[in-house]
Length: 433
Image 1 (cartoon, rainbow, N blue to C red):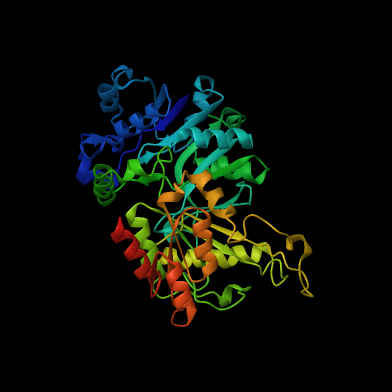
Image 2: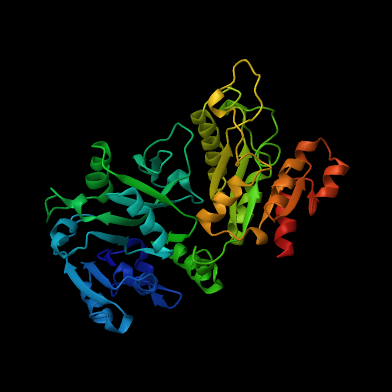
């Protein structure tokens, strides 16, 4: 496998770290240059050949890495005499590139199971696959819009005003690119990958897809971000998030647990977060566990709203959480309901299914997608349905009293732990280790 690393950055914001002697990709993080971390992560995932696109102080990079032999890979270089942006060099490299190659920006630290991403790219027969993830600041990040199958339908740059509820789906600056995407592009001119390559491909119906993963990938383009990444590398947090390793997850019910119980919520105006929800989910994020919502939403089967309405409600929830620095790694919902007889019901969703809780379909789909060890995971909810779902999946269970009107002794006895609200439940789980 081959990777291209855009390593020509000057790193103005890192001048306090690099001074005038180092280009941005050579900024030290936990005692090693950013590029060393990147090359080692790629090598461990089977990447054997690298093309480093260098510019500012490129000779520093050449002296350090040479032909790559000492780092277990083969390295060649392409020097930009003038800065060509994030895509201007790619057409000039076309004949040196494999049919599918990785494209990495030189200011990110990552630990990714690349085989999963490559498998997704090939199954979709994609022209380009973007690594996307939720983060703690979607309000000032580049957002990716996608369809149900992961196909990218649009992008919103971070500097554009957003007067809508949005999915916390952020472009991470890590790609699998098919060489055919470069056909027709002229080389030697400054070009932006998103604006000049990906967006035109999306508009003409090209196969551009978003691969969503909770794995660690962070831009370390400021001194503060370098310090944070160094702490997370040294603590093992970065390595533990890689999907090659089993993950622990805290699954969350929605109504009465994360959001206030309002009955059958069919409009975005009806959803309001519990006061402690963002703090609780932020603690899960910081713990290294995954935070995944699994919720029954029979409003679709009842004909009260459509799938797109539920997704808009969830986008409101993600936007509100993001404003407080919290995120959900995934949201899964079951739109089905087996019982017929409602006058406005949608018969397409009035079916038995494996995903409706207390069935375990949503949990097992997430376990497969994210390598979750269900036996080491928890589910938090406000009803016996949530508790039974956890037991059916071999997990531990926590009951919150928020949606119970003060609690129900029968429910409490069925749970591994009980708590007054989501925040207390999360704290109890994390204290148990």
